[in-house]
Image 1 (cartoon, helix red, strand yellow):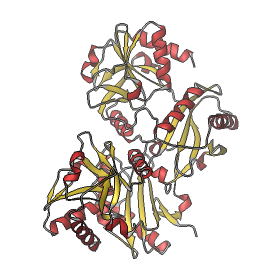
Image 2 (cartoon, one colour; image 1 turned 90 degrees about the vertical axis):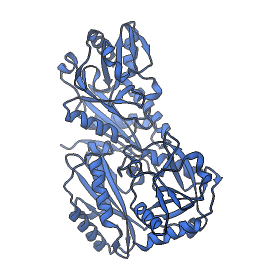
Image 3 (tube, chains in turn cyan, yellow; image 1 turned 180 degrees about the vertical axis):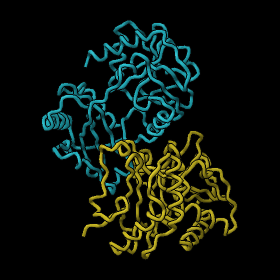
Length: 265
Length: 265
């Protein structure tokens, strides 16, 4: 059976969730999005996602008539229409003279247990995001970096800025643990992940000090351990970077952060 | 009457030229495009556009099954279907497991004579394009820079890199004339405009020396004149930048370059 979707607040067939190629804002990727988890019919951290969606719109001067109440009730309508239990949902808002608003969904993204017990491989990609704080469709660099990582058998690509600092992954935030300190990029240089908020809260709860300095490319092996986080991953340890084994001195701490973060959903 | 369009080589109604929001490569702006002029039913510089389209695909590792012959015959089919005389045509190719290929068209873009006789106003925007040589849909920075220019009453925004060099406009190339020398960015830093090729050829034909150094932000007033070029504009003089009057010592030379460039269409 074909899935349903939301288009401008109305339930439609998923095949009707389409963008005209002649619309200027589609051509220019002038749009923002959010990816949310639905668990047992309940949307996780909805308020945080709506807040970030509004922030992203503000960052690129995208105005639209779809208010939070309307978006929330559209999500509820879609959950009801397809009796959704678990799913990954995607909100997309395209700007312009005739703003467009979509919600679509896929099976819940999840990863094998071994990704958490053994860690994942990452590559490094030298490049800087335009407006890193905003979650926009301007994702070509992330796509290219991630495809390159996949070709090398890695799970994620980490983005390195012109100063050699590892700021974030293509679809994750990035952290280094060193003693009782957790190092990560400051909020203004990266996408402020919803899961990142919980990760930092969990880190504080177990007594870690947060240091808003991102790990440097040439210092990665000096950390006790490195990990990434995202809405679909939670917190996931990094085993290798560019083929080099990374330290795993405090993976139990990473696992504890992951456990706490998931508990708060 | 609704316009026709091409979708994957077939004639369709323009309203069927749409992109599924659920397709990953649409979500990531993993696509390339070209804008072409059709004059009296004839496509201008088709070979150059097809060459650049292939170059853009190569630059982002986008592979697709739509060869030059197929694209050219699709353009011809569209011209015939709608008896097109003059138009601006747009080719779009989206990558991924199921590549998509579209051709759509609009009325021919053209500008008032006064833009050429009086020049246009530009603003400066500090930002660098990702993969500047490729014509991709990753256009959010250009959109934001141009909207800001429009809010200030300007016609185009010029992009300034981290070293204070004015490389190109959001949809144009940029040049400074100084004595018998024409200054512009080297090919590897900017989009190699089809019209830029003709502009450089025209400049040589009238005895100018091409210097591949882009004008610096703080030296703009020291040039004899400044101008921009694009497929739809031809060569167009710049009157003001960020509200400051620019020199117009050699606008007759700009006009001569513009005349020659158009003659070769």
